[in-house]
Image (cartoon, rainbow, N blue to C red; front, side, top):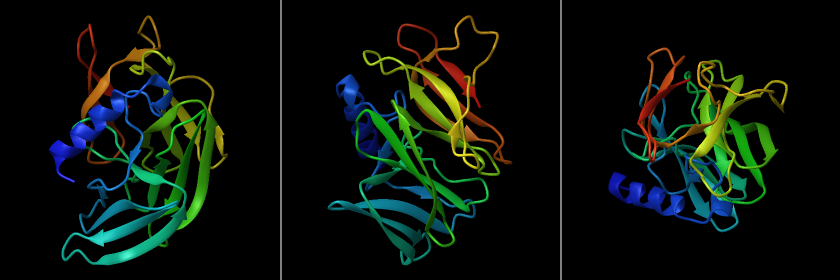
Length: 215
């Protein structure tokens, strides 16, 4: 899918009713998108809808051949992390991939896979509207966007999930100098530091100033 078409898809999803917004300012997960590329640039991970199942594939960026594939029960997609088409879900070492459910409801679900075997190594099921934001470099901590308002999808907080313990950690990830720990805006673009320890996301804040969220 070309970037222009992907952006139109993301904007269309943002225009859906509040109950259909699974990840607040970030637009859940997508099937049929350009996917996410491995750190060495050799593979592209894509999710393709196949009825009630999802075909997750590792495609060679050199010749387009499928290096690995797995059939997942249910609708799963590659997480979108900004409106310019940037995708996420892959750990810094390229060994862990997180995919999100493309369905919307009262709960949010994600799967964790080992990219070397495509074996599912964990799952996350949370009540409420959560979406993928980032992974720690060692892939032990998952950062999630938690939408707080059903009438304003741009109001959110960042939460941390311990993948080893399988639990949502208490508290919010935020700048303590802020008067409010609730942030507001839509992600426009993102870049990641070379060591994978920081992700910088540029947000547009309707009615306010744009800001960069460093995580």
